[in-house]
Length: 125
Image (cartoon, rainbow, N blue to C red; front, side, top):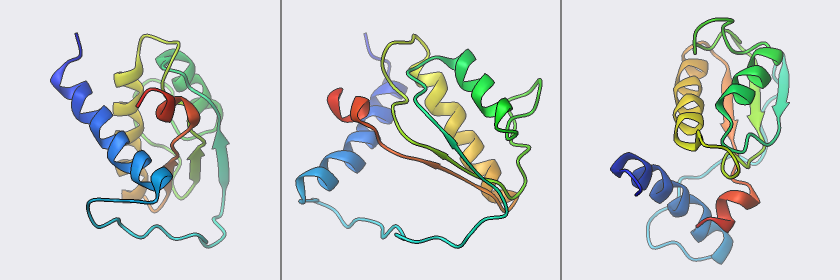
């Protein structure tokens, strides 16, 4: 059974992904810049597939996650998670919650975490 929180997260993903792919949006879309200024440091993080332990390892290897806590330590680093947060693992909601927490913390420190929608998010819509 899907929890209410998961339902909300999935609904948000669908609201973002589906109108963009169909060309029709029943609500005003927020304009997202196509070009960003060159950051001091840029890292890319690949497919996470609902695996929280591997997600933490990848974020620590990228130098943006604290060694023992789920906190942003990347300062002004810009991290891009290139999609596929879902599928295969058992920790999908926890992965999405961690990414959102880090996105907010990164912004507060002058950095950024951009999370993209991948094919696994659209396939599960």
